[in-house]
Length: 170
Image 1 (cartoon, rainbow, N blue to C red):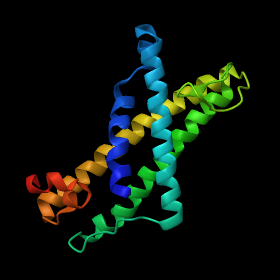
Image 2 (image 1 turned 45 degrees about the horizontal axis):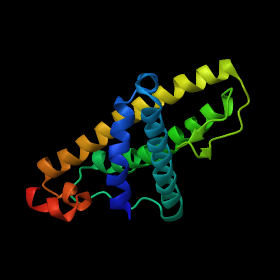
Image 3 (image 1 turned 90 degrees about the vertical axis):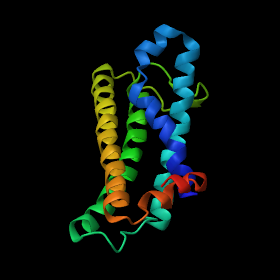
Image 4 (image 1 turned 60 degrees about the vertical axis):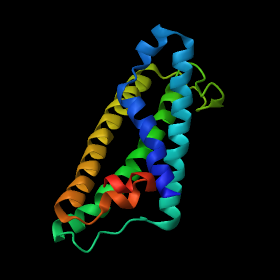
């Protein structure tokens, strides 16, 4: 299941790195609705991942070839990703809570009861955007860490999480 969560969240993560809600609104309601549906799917996957982590702990363990510093970095990096995803979802809830109108994820699921707090909404909006981009930097560090493991240590770190069809290229 973790492999599906891992690769299932990637396209949504990439979408949110490049999709600007204001530009999408100008493109028409269909594009903004797609953004909203993507948000609902992203948050669902993030919450399932967080729940799985809470229930079972980290699924991955540092490999035997990792040097001591990388061994200590491994769980910190993975936990930062998991909790970062949760905090981005929580930030979305904060957006709904401080909004002047009822926001619906995917146009269906109410995010939170709107309290009409414009100043708080501006702050939460700013935090939500920048926490997501900070998480993007952590995702890059995560990918770089595993590419380094695969190429430098030759421990097949990428093969563990890659779909079987891609194994012959790794």
